[in-house]
Length: 53
Image (cartoon, rainbow, N blue to C red; front, side):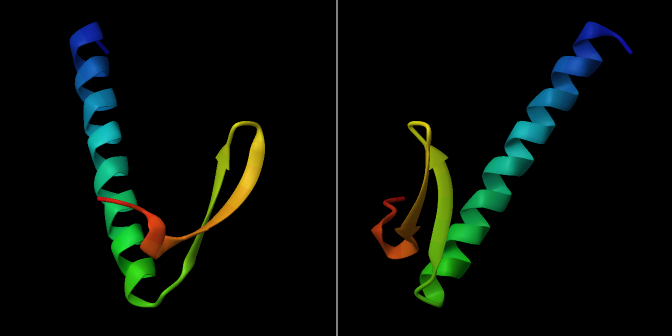
């Protein structure tokens, strides 16, 4: 695989992750759900409605 193909594949993966996380957040907002994230060395639970777009 060439470097260009690898960069293209990485870009597609990152874009796919952005789309899937946006859909997950939208779904969690509809059901007033919570999302678990790892930030600042800690596992945190946050309400999806508190996430700004």
